[in-house]
Length: 224
Length: 240
Image 1 (tube, one colour):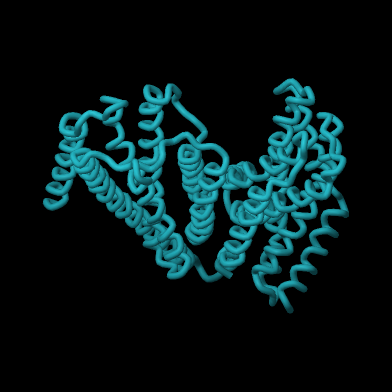
Image 2: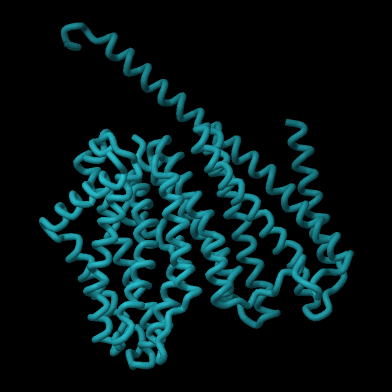
């Protein structure tokens, strides 16, 4: 079976599993909203201040909710030893990882689709005219979070204290992504919105580097 | 044993002499005066840090390709030594920055990169301590180590594009860079001294790690034997 087809089947399985209960999605969305609301107490949310701190706030909320959301991705498989079944299937280990990555990408994107309008209303940031460009930045940033996060979720699933370990592994590595994502979002939230090509290219580069690394190293992640 | 004592004494003498040279032999710097003397150990600590973390990266790749337990031991030893050197750099940096820049810390490219790198390698050690199965520990931490090392240039680039205050490179940094010849000699001496101290520490740490692995293997073997002995001594009826 080709990798793409295997990954698509695994993606369908992940989605079916999640949409039976929607536990993960609901918790992620609520957590992200809590972060956004708490930030309004940390600084004075006037329109000028919001434009300055808003992009950082938004991405911190995404990174934190991502680091919580990615944990069950592999831990869920461990509780019933279903990862062994996946390993035994005649598919490449990258297909398993890719299926998970695609599913996590969809989950985090859905959370973002809910969170961005809520953020825009609460902090009085106008999204008119920048939706398409903002979507590009969000997609590139989310891919970076998901690729590294899914790999580290596979790593931390074998460890003790894995809930705590995953953010510890993931957040320092995402520092460059955070800078690039915040800067390109800030350019879009400014008075004259524009797409900062340097940072968008940086985001794309980050995604390519870590996607390639996870493709090269996925066999070691999946071994028994 | 004797050669190790001689070696340690030589390393100690060298580092003391390097300290003397940095404080008294090197000429005074034009604008920063005495404060600049911290440079000799600050930059040497960075050289040692990068050497150590590069060794971690190489041993991570070597472990994944050869599966030799020794590479894993070398990786963890170099990571620990690297964190120690990195801490020295992170402590001497603010001590130098306060009198010269007027602030302890600034979020500039090199400072931020080093800080993030320090955090990542601490995560690497924490990950290792939380993975119980030795095979998983070796291969999964190697994957994380490779990711961390790949991230270092990205952290640097992102901060470089963003904001930078750290002085431009002194060596190979353009027409107005470069230092006094005596300063250069003292600097090379300090760098050699730091590396000569670092390498025996690394080798010793590596030996300890190998011994630890050996003890672990022997313990497992003993457990296996005692289990065998128990099952053999049991009466047949009970065993059935």
